[in-house]
Length: 154
Image 1 (cartoon, rainbow, N blue to C red):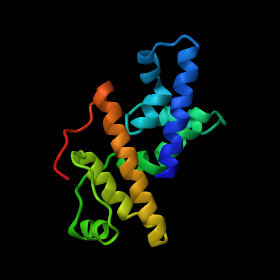
Image 2 (image 1 turned 180 degrees about the vertical axis):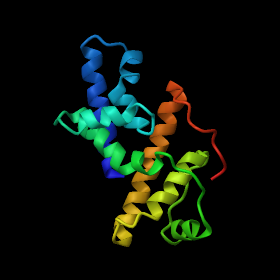
Image 3 (image 1 turned 30 degrees about the horizontal axis):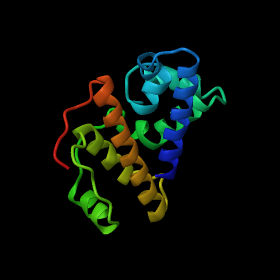
């Protein structure tokens, strides 16, 4: 959750800097780096991620973090949470926000099942990070019409 807050704080700073430089809020919100940071599963974001992996710009770091904590799990995600996934969430007092899209739930399943995450503490952290990013994506897309899947009951 801390990384998510840091990412959002970095984006606010970037948005404020760009706004002060004369860009309108609509231009900023639709910039590829901002859009792909909040909605990294968009088809054209892979090329932007490749570009971002080659520099040290704070926007690039925010985009890389978004991909690692959210985008890679949600890209082409299909399926749904299993009973075992729901037990994991319940056992670790992780509550799902209402209105998560079916795409988000499929991505959450991918996080819970990620074999590269070795410890329970790391898995709980990754799940909470993913949920925070999913909520941010939903909010961003609500205002910017990303074309996300319709929300389903959590």
